[in-house]
Length: 294
Length: 293
Image 1 (cartoon, rainbow over the protein chains, first blue to last red):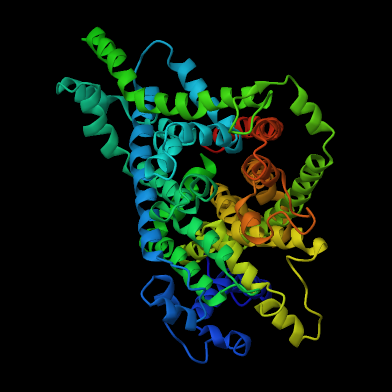
Image 2 (image 1 turned 180 degrees about the vertical axis):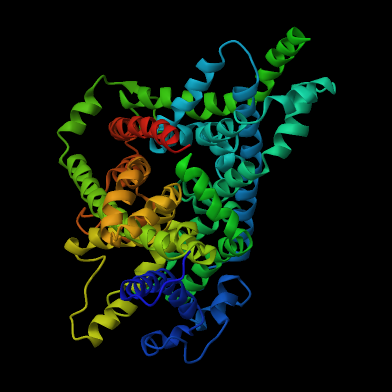
């Protein structure tokens, strides 16, 4: 970057950039601000950037830390809510899918890229063709399948369709394994490694970047999942945060939804990804360079 | 030596592939075949499916609500993709010409990380007719409150606006990643020749970005044809079917009315539309890789 003298066009560009950032962040600010507002104040205190009487009671009641009467007094419906549990369910759901799917797709990607076996290109072509099948098309039969298998309302039923594979991850990881240098592999063979040894000791450690990229992306998608968990994991024990938010909205008894409670719950649904963003922001941003141009 | 490796490879390969092949067969291949079968049957999930030939399809083509849902989806795709792509292109260009800050990029990525359900709730609150921030603002400026989700003319633009907010940052970052591949010396040379920013954008950025831009456009289009979560939270297809997109219509047919066969037929129609788009995407994936790498 060369230093430049003041230039009105550049200043204007910066102003535009700042407007974009404010528009991006403000809704989140307003969400947290509402979550900290007492339910009774919602009609009167809705202009300032900070609440007049900040409180944590909304968080307490959606986490199930208050008694029913207290929750009702604070503006809730009195329906039992336990967002701590829903958060834990979501974390388990995302962790399971991201870890297992990444491993299996890496194994397949490696086989398609580095192993020689008859029918390889044909099988790869068929698996990749699944990219063409839109989720809604497999959703209905999969729902019936999971129902017939007796997996309704279980974590197994919720993770079943995605935990083994997604075509994109296979495609993406194969792409990377193709670029591994031959001679490293040959050296490993001379050291007496078979295909598994090369995969575990050489290929996986050398692909940390792409593996983390696909793992992170899978985590984010799993965190956002809604329709499938809604159909299969509606019950209290397996409910994910997104499903719980939907259920919570419909439970609102009055004409006006329980906004302060909903915003507290929404804040909790954003918190984990926010932590992810703070810890792995650079990695996440770089992962877009991967997926964007590869 | 070599032949041992080949024998090892062959035997190992199928073990490497086993989980993915099982996943593919059970949750892609088999359900796809089942889906096609359901589409030619009368099935309510309680009865055994009975073959009815092309009856579901015939009904589908004379179903005004189905056509309406396609129309509504098209309207949404046009609104959303138009604004999202134009804004993202602008933001990406600003970033490309101003800064490489990772903090700024991470901030732009934030809405993409958040579940659509949360985004729906967030904006339902911000756009609430009586208590929402936006209507409060409009009120202070002397305007009448707008029923963003309850007024049939506003509902779809509101939803398109929300998702534009949610996905523009992500799209901008993808385009920005593409711009980073454009050689910097082209801009430096143009600057020496006295070219302004607008000329550089038109003559350098836009033409060289075209493969990436096309790919991003197709990918976002495939995504927006499948909008569901936001609508399920905010309008649930209403008011008067103004936001009942195809995905939501299929969902209702299947899980509200239990018309499984009919829903499967509609899903096949959507699959055909998306199949064409996906085929284009696969071509572009190949094209953009060879152009840039």
